[in-house]
Length: 484
Image 1 (tube, rainbow, N blue to C red):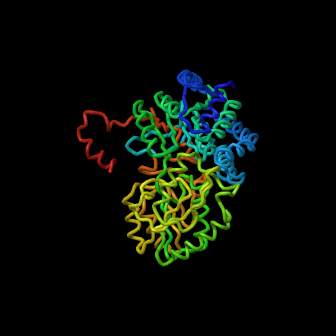
Image 2 (cartoon, helix red, strand yellow):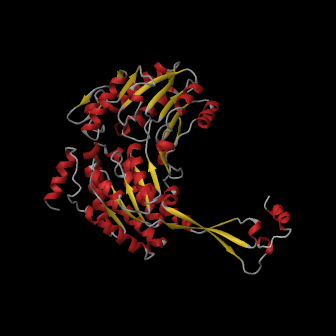
Image 3 (spheres, rainbow, N blue to C red):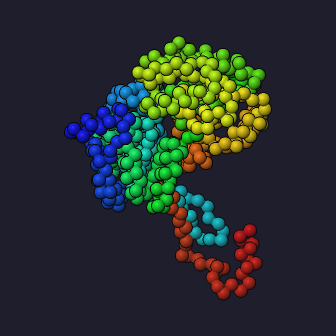
């Protein structure tokens, strides 16, 4: 890689808008159209539809991740200051588990499924055949830059597609290792990488793909969907929003505090499913706050902003934005910061209202506004007046309250008496609803997302019942008896 590559490195570090004409080790933007054509040609050979081919490629990917594990961990440290444990737990390990699960079950998922046929079509049989879309685009964000690029890619491979992966340039070093891995193990006619900033995104979205998988903000998600509509391209949008966390008066307060602090301040709050704001019953508010302060100290020490294993804010723009949001309430814990490292201590804000600035946008940082409530019914009504969240967390010992909350609130997914962990279960589909996204993935849902289901009825030639053919005579009565 030449001087352009070195220029890229410094441009990205200082968050300057990137000129998409500069080149990387992957595909130059001028070659994207050619790469899509090459991928369509390769796809049309039918090789990707072979289950053994798909399994072999998933094994290649898994082995490469293990081979470059240390480099991935180092990249995540450089981009977000993630500790090795957190990097493995939330990025590498979760991807390896997804790939393992997929390899185990893919052969069964891919088999044609025999389904029932209505009597009106007797004698015949009905089947569902799965087929890949073709060439898909996967656009990933910076907050979990490895997981959110590679987990969808594993699903696309499992379904038999060719793929172009577009990682985020804010997470420069992780994008670099993603590119290195993909170039090493895949031919670009099968899986390719495009690097760049906004102009690269725009150029990609101008092209016609067979499917687009996007993870990012609702604002950019709207632009992706608008671009996809020009080609009638189906999309999955994994977005975000303000995910509420409710603690009622029956909750195990000590355990709730521990699990909320863990889930909220994981990756310094830069998690799409992090608890965005806390709603606590007025009778247990002070006790919960006291316990949360305790666990912040236990987890991150007395000076989290200097803790070597505490993640940093991705760039200066987001760092300054969070300071603006901090003015929305009274700081009752945290508030310290480290300008040199862009670390902001876990911060609890009291005196926040539904109209406060911090309640008008997704926080995506280590700030947790706290609101109190007296009636569960009233607080769920307030939540339902807002855009549907990606996640929902409820701490309670009351089965009645639990059932009522799940039945009443609309959200993508969530937990009872915990936070965040629902997305780590490959047996559960993960995705949003409304403004928090559309479509789902993880486990079989990833395979289904990147798969088109073809419906087939196979009619027997041994018998041809005359009922459906004109002239209809007195057939209506018999038809009604069959089609009740």
